Length: 489
Image (cartoon, rainbow, N blue to C red):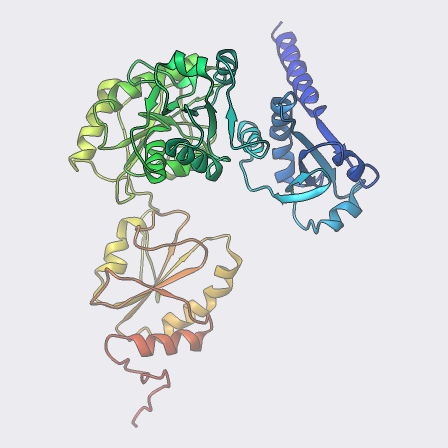
């Protein structure tokens, strides 16, 4: 019986995906131009069957096509296999990486696609590309249909479209059409129903409605800047749904609850835990931000705190204004979360630091720093210091290793420390902006709070000349130009 149920579920899943794929136009050299000419707006994915990123995108792409298939104005999604039927077309549009996505108006390229890569985000982004930035609502029935949505909406009610408030609204909508959903009405019956002729309101998505905050918030400002601030501060509410596409909206200090967040398949279960976070969040308005995130979508963040697995209850993680990390160690509850927030705000918690174990011996010329000994080995060592942040898999880092080792040996008797740190296995202090590997910083011994990014050459002589010039006191073995000093016999 168990196998039968599994087979039925598998068949249903395959059927759903296959059905959605029917909504994606399959184009090649022979039908590309003729098909696109028939459609006003088309998103085209240029792909290769062997491409891993393409394989991950295709089911989301198919779901997006299914979401928008009945839209008015119409939107089409298409795909082109650059290895077979679409070789010439892919060459014409200079496709040299996969997947490449472009938006077409009929058979002419309008722009490169730079939006989300998940179904709902793709649909939302493409809907913003068609028609006016704000949809005109022409009747009460039209308003009801427009508000039957899963998106948060910014809605303007205006007695005259040339009023100052309407102009502010339309200008803001045009600048933010890809990010937010806009509508407006000047219909007399709609305005009468509202009881107010000129206003802008933000209406949160129905699935995010809760008893702790209003679902509709009125804009009280006078300028476009005021409107931008209003939307930014209110769009996600007390506890926003933080996704990969919206993660940049959530600023530190931030507390995030990670669990099985899924508003498509389990909205009730998702809001069960969100409501408990909301109960705490309402007591700390203006002091700290709150969010919920899918544990599956943000496993990389969980790994940063040492979590390989999240059970049924949420895991609570936080970052303060300095981007230091904190974790709720107790089992999640309303009381434990409230206690955690209070202690975080009162600076009573120890930051979580991801660190390798302390090295058993650190006697080699190149000193090894880990998060646990970073202050000792780098900051408080009493020496000028050159520190390299590397990744074990990085080819450039491997190439640098013998040069770095030789540098450390050459300067072993100098008042200079040569240090390395695996930045993938240890938390890097926030003042070191490590965005790639290897990244190197120079720290003069008397101003360790101001690390200087090293952007010089990577050969031995380059390092020696730099250190000889920048050293707090002249090196014993080299003059300021980096030339070896003569040794007296």
